[in-house]
Length: 127
Image (cartoon, rainbow, N blue to C red; front, side):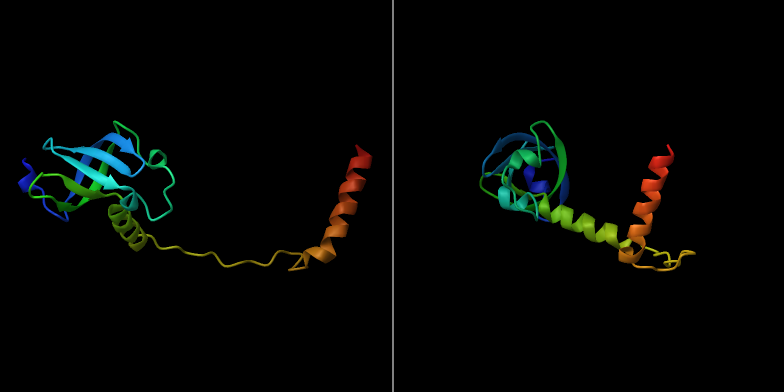
């Protein structure tokens, strides 16, 4: 595969080859290179790229653009993570169990806590 066969919007696997304060360099399967700019690492604040990727690691990224002159790709982890989160959330349905009243009812902690403390102290004295 040459870099002309990779297009913007493609999701591909890359191997991280270098890390700089401004982003991570990656080797694409066609042996061309790309950069995941620090702004494309995560939706969260990225103080250190090393906290998100390591050299030698293979990650899935989305191709944002390819420079036609150099063949270098602009890549994004963040775009793919957004896609995965939306996809993941769509397939999960949370069923919340109803809250059941205990035999003692819903007594407030303030009224029941002194009784619990007293029972605890009495149990320790018995030991």
